[in-house]
Image 1 (cartoon, one colour):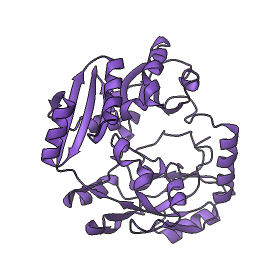
Image 2 (spheres, helix red, strand yellow):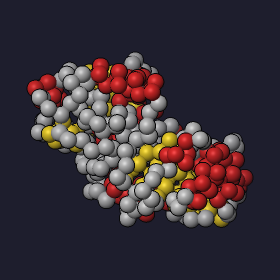
Image 3 (tube, one colour):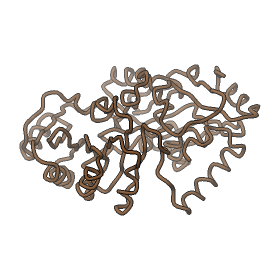
Image 4 (spheres, helix red, strand yellow):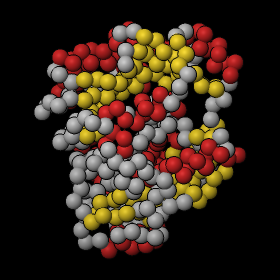
Length: 353
């Protein structure tokens, strides 16, 4: 099924007698637990419906390729500040993410530590719930945040609460100057360096550790970047595209199992040591240690290892349940939300649990 309009989509969902699998560009195929249902393709719901650079607002239909949105923003020297990642390289899929799919998984890159996540830039959304009703929430300008919590709720819901048809974002100007600083050092010292930089007044927009080095990114006006770089020290890396690799993790493409751990930055070194002892590898630490990418061929998972630290682990690729088990109270809340938005359980059933 490939609806050509929001109204047609709503009718298809209202008439559906069995589960539906929602598909955008297919670049995130395999992310989330498998769904058995009739394919519902959103590629025809495409196009930028409003872009006002002066108001820092962009609205697009859900099936719009992210590349098209970013090209339009680039012409005005603007950007999606949260630096959306593409899962395609690590999953081995065609790299054609849509803006709706980006919202559905709350795809956020290294700049999240400064600009917030995808959901924090989302100011409006239209979607069709499991009963075939069209729902609009939020607004078209940054000051209009009516129903803001519901807008945020749709980000990261993986299509289990509704089929997103249109999204509205606040956008930001691109920084005038970017500098990446490299500090060759061991893991413990490197993670401490990242945390110290995040606690400094130097406005860091990227903080990662990989290949035996801590990496810091600073952005802004030229003289300001120069001053902050001198204060932070380190070797200046000329190629700032390194942050795209840190976001998309193409180096993990050949791994059988890929895990994404969200932890307290201060616990990252202790967690890494425990993981290494169990045979796991930790190729990259992002968000000053708050995000750890983990690989390994083990038949067990890192979830038990990190449980005492209070973190959670998402299986991006592998034969494991994708999402960290919910606590009983949280599971009840999640089930209650799904029953309200999708009472017939036809939208991506089982994707998240």
